[in-house]
Length: 200
Image 1 (cartoon, rainbow, N blue to C red):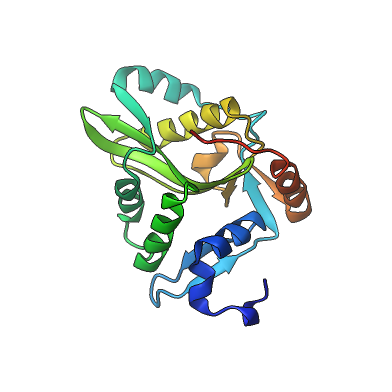
Image 2: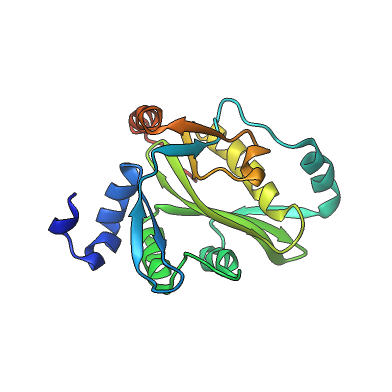
């Protein structure tokens, strides 16, 4: 798709969003203007699903924290949790776009609950054998890390090929995240689309 073929609103239509995600692009809204741009970095960060790491400190902590993991239970609360920070790229317009995708079965959540309350989690876009992680949050120590660990195990169980986490962070590096070239990333995308995985 060429930009001059589409109006700005068209980029947030579900069919176009999925085509853009499938090409490796992802959206972010400017925190000041709210304008949504699509990004296609030359270097991509993934967590290899055949070679990830679960931090030892997390394993020890989880057994004491009484966490409960739920999938696709409260999508909007997860997105709102991800937005609760000083600055955010998740604009109201993007939330509305994600709601449309969620209704079509493309958006999924991994949620960490404690004593009946949502205390952390993440959401992302699933397409064929690829999962595009978007954002995560934590109101309780270890809650987002627990959700990520569960996502890794779940994607393996469901035979996914790619977990795209966009940019490297110290948080992700602990789980074995690596940076790859866009050429390598494209090869992984191609192999991912030979699969027809179901998230749930």
